[in-house]
Image 1 (cartoon, rainbow, N blue to C red):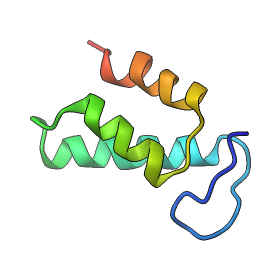
Image 2: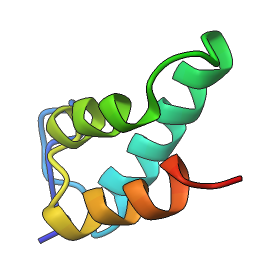
Image 3: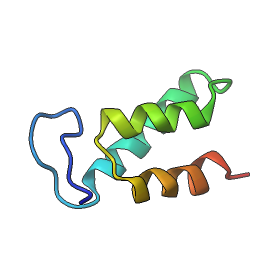
Image 4: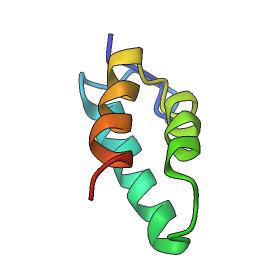
Amino acid sequence: MAQGSGGGGGLLPQGEALSRALRWLDDRVKDDPKLDRSKLVGEASVRFDLGPMEEEFLLTNWVRRP
């Protein structure tokens, strides 16, 4: 679990996919702050092959942050 392709074509160390997803998400909202964060998390989950716990972490800590 927590290993995924991350778009790079190989397995990543545990937590690396989540780190890459966070960087990608932050870059996306810097480019366009009006984007729907929940939808972005869904896209990142597929793009970086995140597990359900990682996706829930992002929804709880990244989407709903003040």
